[in-house]
Image (cartoon, rainbow, N blue to C red; front, side, top):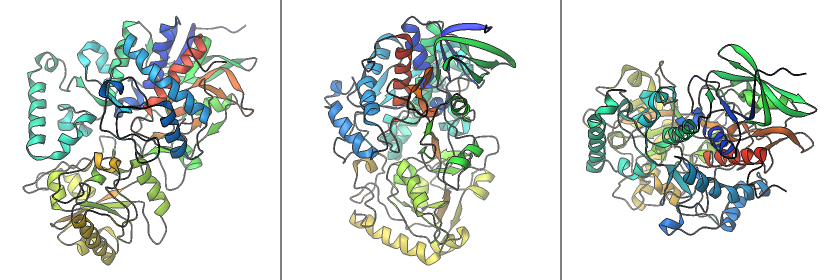
Length: 572
């Protein structure tokens, strides 16, 4: 007879948005729930993200007069996923995600705000919308967490505005990119709020008004705390325990001690992807690849995927990720990869390959940018790395990864590592091309042609700025296209651009109930998955901002309902 060290109804592995949402729902359905986390801090990759959820027909849209329907959203998803996603799972997501949002809003601290002008990533596709489906978490006061704030995963200080003293929301993007007085006023207000918050300053030098992923994680954690749902940090899952083919519990290692945990109703794997496992990436994904170009958290090494496979689970989409280009900063004390989301859209820059030629619409969705890099990468015209090229006008107005805008003598006070290792610059395009090893004639011709497009307002080669999506992140330019601006003021700069990601999206195959499937398409009793350790419901697509976290929370929510017998319209 099995000897157990502890027994619960529902065991949740992973403390990102998927795991915490599942734990909340399971508790509210009457379950004794335990949440475990491998790392010494909670929040997973959610805490490092924008915290946005993509939920069509969500409850907030109607308040802003935005119309939507499940039918329109399904049509959109069918078109953008191109057969890589099952219709039944997509329908389940569209039916359940709005209910998940409404349930959390009515029973927890998890509240979102509608991004009314943030379009889908392919808004011109039938069923797409110009805004409203993406929602970001409301501002959260971390002081409500008390000492628990010290155990939250936070982005490295170097990746935060002014070392963590200034916070911003997705909705602030237009103001931040406008530059000039709007940006100065935004920063002044933020810094005044920071320094006058004396209660917070007595406790921490970081801003405690949390936004983005940290706000979502903080709201979820406070909701767990109020319910006294236990969260064990420094606790990794080592083995799934089965009886008669059903998963009945797990062996976990808590601070060096092995414990056998019985899970009477089920185990949910929500432990993130395998982006930090170089061996798995090289086995499953397209070269060149590694574990250095990702923004996923350092504990995401694919443990849950491997353990699921060990009890008969099948895998899918292992060659995929939530792709996003990145630059690599030469800072030894912090995570080197910095995501590039808005930089590539702004006027006054282009991306070129080893021949100095443009090969894509730089302002296209970041997932598509990386796919274009891999598709264009050949021995005679390498696109990995590609190069982000810009001039002094761009340098004075916009940030580029760790490089903050500077207008006077832009590089005088930069850290030595940045000046020597992050970028190359030259007074001429030909000189810059020679420094980075690309064809000088190719680069000068590419810039000359692009400058003509900037004047006309029409990118005849790749259509940059044609889509509403392109224009969400854009700059102030005197020309007719806010994504186009000439590169004409020396010095010129080049920064290597790599095919990064926000996390992998392949893993354990699941059904509409978030149950993990074996090679006969049968659910493994007692075993569920949500988030990036599961094969994404979105297939090979990235339909909109928040299409990672929205499904993660929704299928964690569904898993809890299926395991605990709560409301689930999809249950037969």
